[in-house]
Amino acid sequence: MKLARAIHFDESDMNVYHSPARTGEWCISGGFEFSNWTEADLTGKPRQAFANGWLGCETFGRVTFVAVTQVEQAEIDTLAQALAEHFVQIYGAPDVATALPVAAEELGHMAELCEDHAPNTLLTVMRELTDAGVRESFRVIEAQDAGLEQFAIHGDLEE
Image (cartoon, rainbow, N blue to C red; front, side):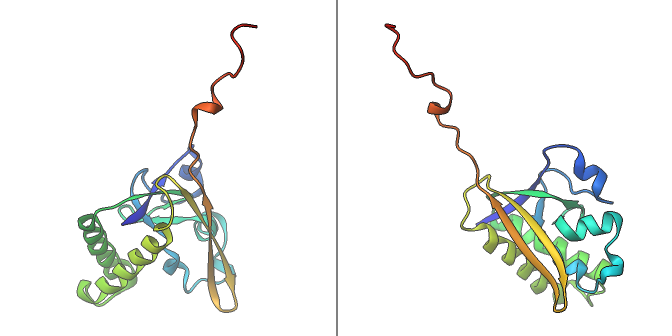
């Protein structure tokens, strides 16, 4: 099974999100956070989180890029538990048992998004508010394999 981890290429996420995700933590879309948002909510750092932020499943911070990688079922189970607890503490779910299937569904959605991509494939998320609610779209940036021919100098040593 595959999931995605937060990745940083520079320090920009530390500046654009109120709470940046930690490099290497497992991530999901986290679009549910914005389900009741209106245009009035889309200002400053919250707007950046809405527009382009994946949700880290440990810090519940945001990150711009995630990289696809293998995940073990035991890790998925731990993430589901933490996410369910987050739903209870932050979103008012009645209890962890009730929130657990929803957490598993969120993780399943992310696993589906990652399943057909090679390890190290980068993903970005883009969101917009529509009359029907939050619309998410995803961009895939394929991992680049560096072949020897990219670095070898071809020529004749006899010249």
